[in-house]
Image 1 (cartoon, rainbow, N blue to C red):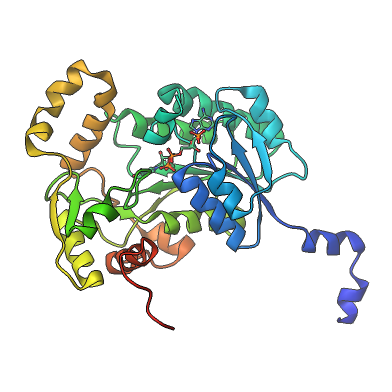
Image 2: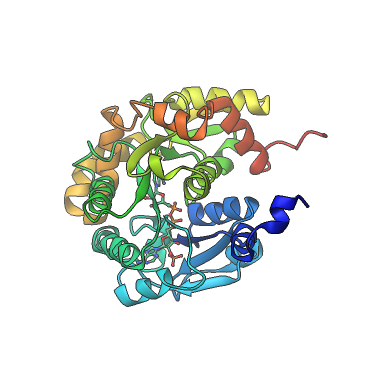
Length: 329
Ligand SMILES: NC(=O)c1ccc[n+]([C@@H]2O[C@H](COP(=O)([O-])OP(=O)(O)OC[C@H]3O[C@@H](n4cnc5c(N)ncnc54)[C@H](OP(=O)(O)O)[C@@H]3O)[C@@H](O)[C@H]2O)c1
């Protein structure tokens, strides 16, 4: 040990060796659990904010032991979660009302994504949370016609208005969704594309999880209080993705519509009568217009390094999903 280190005050040594704690809201979700994994791999301590009804199996298998039960629609529970000791140095917000996951657990969709998120920002501000990392959505500032995209913008604006330090990661479309429909189809030689022939910016969730962990632990305070697009280096169409899977697997994969063309054609009409289809219909219309595309990946490059390429992300996805056998080291 150096003379300097020996002379270091005890309090400073303690601070240096203490585990850095990050609170993850929505930890039981598909992305949330990937974020937990990324934080644990970085050596951080994770405080998982879950609902009383949340399934903790995945988190327990990752070794999480610090849980706080809270709901975005319950301000008192949030205050308790964000003032738990030892204090966390960041909160990553990955919860969502608008997802199949929450629908299955009776989430109150738009209330959670509007009022619920305001409650979270208020609780963070009251607790003096040093930074909130918000999982947001690409181009949410322009997608006024897509409710759950626009609700992300409202949260970004509320964070700024309340002067709560934050970084919003505006993610592209997930390659692996909450219910992953890609891997089973790719096994049969098909890549399911949502809007045939239209390019969109995408991301593989372990990469987004890694960015969230970096945003919580590494990004300097001077880079906070902005929104950053996070996605692959270029937008991609279904046939281009199918070609990337073909290269990764060494066998043919072709793009086919995820939604039967007839259903796709009548969806706008159906959505007029079935409220639960309106948001999805608006998302598809937004993609069809070419709206779900990052216009600028420079900030992503500055903060997190070169954005992943399609081939790199698809190759890792294939390995992670057991679509190819891992090569011997
Ligand atoms: N899918 C995409 O292409 C895409 C693209 C860009 C951004 N995003 C964003 O990525 C984030 C994560 O998505 P995901 O796929 O991981 O979602 P997910 O698997 O459905 O997880 C949602 C999480 O939110 C929690 N939650 C829901 N309502 C809550 C409430 N009222 N209070 C507290 N927690 C609540 C759920 O808890 P339970 O386990 O109790 O249900 C679950 O942990 C979302 O913010 C989404 O908007 C997604």
